[in-house]
Length: 124
Image (cartoon, rainbow, N blue to C red):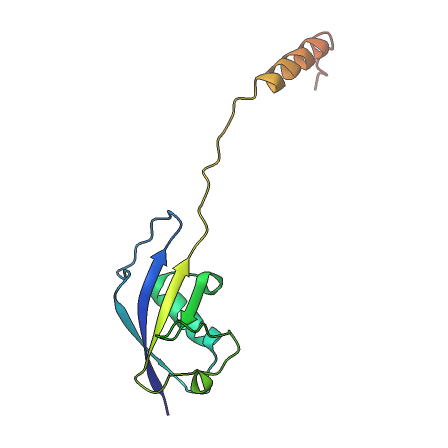
């Protein structure tokens, strides 16, 4: 027997990354899954839908109790077939890398070229 678990996207912080995805905070996604499945298995299914890695997801019940990854859905307090869990996604901010000029290297390279200038190329 499969359960239908309604996943309400409570918070969806993508860390500034633009993602092509139709889901936004406040929306509800329905997931079909076995009641003996774990929270981590539910997170894996959610990851495919909302484009958020499992390690950036937290699942809670409507009272705010967070469920551990190895907890079976059937053992989650307040969750049953057609029940609702809350999804909280918080991805780390992606820092832009600044490319700096290599002026010091250019001087070293230019000096090396001057040292090699006196050696003739082998004929072949």
